Length: 122
Image (cartoon, rainbow, N blue to C red; front, side, top):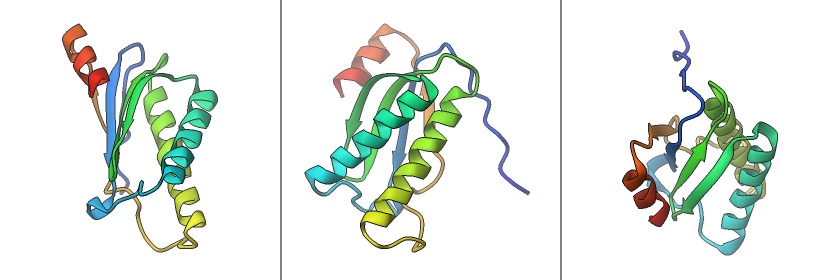
C-alpha cells in the first residue's frame, strides 16, 4: 500500500525543506549549488509556484514558496526532488545507487509576518 497523498491547499505561504539521506553533503562545490538552482528555476517555470526565498546548506535546503492552487506544492516539490536526484546521480555516475534525500519533503504553513521575516532572514 502506498503512502497517503498529501493535500496542501494553495494560496498559503509555506516553509519547505528536505535533507540528504544520512545527512551526507549534497552541495560541496559551487557547481552543486548552481545545478540545484537550475532545477529550482525549472520547477518554478513548470508549475508557476512563486518562490519567495531559499537557502541551500551543505546537506539540506529551505524554500519559502507560495503555491497558487491546491496540491501545487506537492507537484512542485515532487518534480524538484526527483529531477535533482536524477541529475545529481547522473553527474556523479552513481545512477541507481540509492536515495539522495532522507524522505519526503516537510512543509509548514507560515503563520504570520514575523514568521515570514524570520524565514527569509535565515
